[in-house]
Image (cartoon, rainbow, N blue to C red; front, side, top):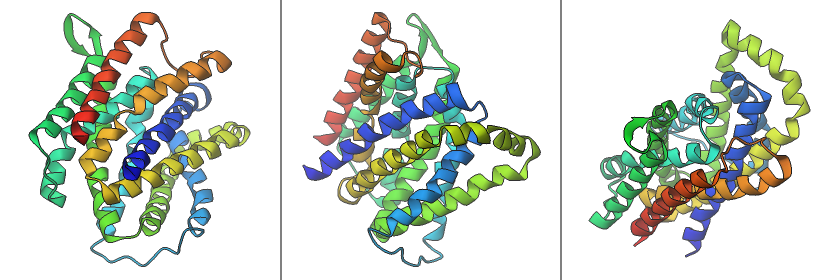
Length: 296
């Protein structure tokens, strides 16, 4: 039960990060590369904290490709993700992370030899169907909005990342896995400085970053706080079960968004009209049902 609690702690904390990401993308910095760069720059401040939990160990050449894939997805999935945050509600964007479930069961089967029951795979089917329903532009027309395809690309990248993370925590301690992922992802984000347009966007966004540094730091602390229980859960539970629990994240985004809306108004992109709330709650309820089926 403790592992299940830790697995649920990750989407609770990450839901708060989704709201901050929406604030960054819609209200502060319009350049995706600049947001990614400054988020990654803030990562550097978290690295020394890892030494409170242990000292990172040396890695082998066989382990390096998995850590590179994790770092690359951690950096570049943010490009379509921030585009999606500007086009649809934050809770719906969060729900679309569950699309990675299409690939995870198959990849987990072949790469880490995890096999689940037919009912558990059915649970993932429910999650995927609910995610698609959330993004239909009209209830009588099978037409998906553009953000669905953006987040589908995100889901593919995160599916690879989830299985690589499972390999990493099976073969490395979590401090080592997180340390190398942070270092590599920070180096990768620095590649944006090599291109004139993105470098100009990063420089022009610096005053905004400096004024709002406390929000970026809070986002990083909460995000890493969600990563740690997720890594622990991955070391105990099947990767498909952990990802299924993560599918509850949009429920927490909606709840936190409603609370923050009363204090900060429309700073976070979210539609709170009754009909939209009912549709979201229905689809999020189906996602939760899928999670229950996976945990049976």
